[in-house]
Length: 120
Image (cartoon, rainbow, N blue to C red; front, side, top):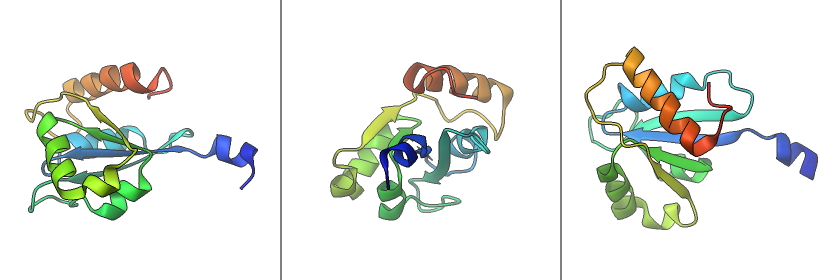
């Protein structure tokens, strides 16, 4: 791959919460069809809609968790796969429904702080 195609490749974002039903899934949907980011989401708990795997972490350029406990769970279970990965705690509590307008506003605010103005 030459440098010009590498520079234009979308940054891969993995959003992680507990159940992958509300917060991380909403964050993933926020980036649907975004030209500069590709997003996926997963959960840390056994009953998650999609449970996080080593493959998810290997795919991601940046891992964005909703709470500190998600970072701790990932580090315990996938320490080796996280080596060198940027992990961002968005500090978003588990009190929102899927696509809640307040959740969307909070995600946009926190993501712009971390990723810049291209956040949708």
